[in-house]
Image 1 (tube, rainbow, N blue to C red):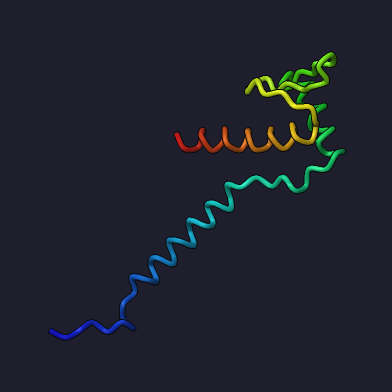
Image 2 (image 1 turned 120 degrees about the vertical axis):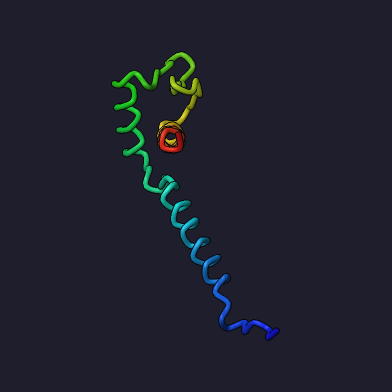
Amino acid sequence: MATPDIHDDTSADYEQFEKGLLAQDHDAARVDTADVDDATARRLVDDLIDADVVTPVPEDRVLVHEPSGTAFDSPTQLAVYHRVWTAARDADVEGE
């Protein structure tokens, strides 16, 4: 029986193709938080307060993200958290 020619073996090509597809899926699932500056965060938090998703607690100087019960002392941290939380929730819904 002849030894298979390693140059004719395409299994590595298929594995590389699969790895590339998985990387694309992973990249699509990522949430971009680098563009959350202070002004953007403030607008998002104001919108979330209006929608009753966030409750300000002035005496404690925190903002409470109601769906998760998590408190933040920074609008920027809250905005980034909410983006990631929303993306994770949406990914769970798609996976069902």
